[in-house]
Length: 198
Image 1 (cartoon, rainbow, N blue to C red):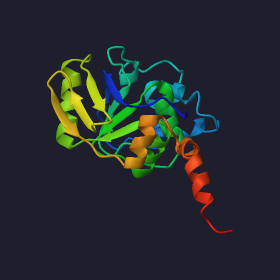
Image 2 (image 1 turned 180 degrees about the vertical axis):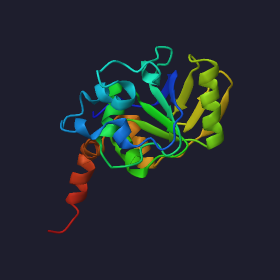
Image 3 (image 1 turned 180 degrees about the horizontal axis):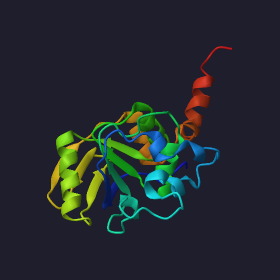
Image 4 (image 1 turned 60 degrees about the vertical axis):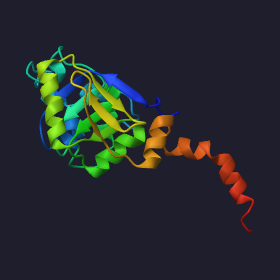
């Protein structure tokens, strides 16, 4: 399988309440030389995380030990800018399995779904509630239920639904990328082929 199956994720979350976070901020262009997915997490938000001497910037959220978890909560228009797949690779390699925002750039959203990151779009009002819950308690857990297509703030019980393409949902539930999906139906493909005229 391309990645682990995604069903229900319960996790604390890392808040990044910034709008228009683009792919060059997620993974700067100078780190795009590698072609394998591994290792990009080290440079996730590199210029926001580190000073020029490679020392951590104390005021950046990923350097604050009170915030942790497999969910990244971002502001509106997350993943804008260039279409680099490496942005999604960096987020996955760092350990995030879900990104929540009120709006995603389409290409970033597609790249995320292709590698096992679930991009969840919620209303601006519900996004604010998530940020407020994390601010009130950094250990507050969020539940992302893919089969039911809901996001729930467990401390308050507030919940909202989200949309996802049926094909991508099925792939996430099974841990499939596009090739894995084709492999899973190869018998059906072979049977269909026998019905076609030569």
